Length: 342
Image (cartoon, rainbow, N blue to C red):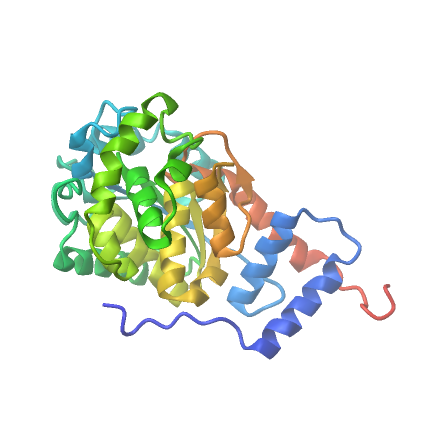
């Protein structure tokens, strides 16, 4: 499934050379830390001191989770299929921001409970929703393999092959629950800490929510590798997006992720291939413990922090001009002499 993947960083000597050039360009400019880091990251991914981004694409993945049937996602009263309809009609914030910033938007059905027939939708349905992880493994090993392959194929055979910037969005009911279960499982983090103060979870339902989640977590048995743990909790859209991130990193694209779910997938990617973190930029997340923990694990800061739970890619589309600005600065700013300071 991943045997042919190579995710590498620049040679140490070349990395030092690029960093020195960028440092010289930044000597007399008080550029925000997020832009400095983004520009440096893009330069190192592309192995050039004058980075550029061309024809960006955002893939937003949709799917239904069996756990949503348990009533654990009380803030939602609709299925992921209903959530997808405004995106298809083109009236969502993601659509608007993408058009404004000339970003190609691709909507991917990985496992919606109902079939939506529209030419705007890329059909990659594995099944009509995952199993309920309260009672069973969410994804089988065969389904996991199909998801990852499907995500990789999306990037490998994308229509716009000259694109070197790939955004990953997720829009599904219960994907947040999958993320906190994965974080609690793989890092032994307390569920209370992960859930509290995160805008994805209603504070009034915390006691009930934790009462339901703890027994599920405690019944999982011995800890396994990240892909196996994803089989326990993730949605088809998350597993497919993981494959897309892996392939984009393999092809040395700049990868932008959005919010808790995107950050979690980036983190899982880095657990599988530590070098992948050097290709990934977090467009936005929140001040919550879970989001800040993931950013720390990836060794980066998000471009911005929102006060609401956003994962669909709209944070990427909205903040993409900041990433472009970082590249423009590195392309147009003169390199000052580090020795003379002039």
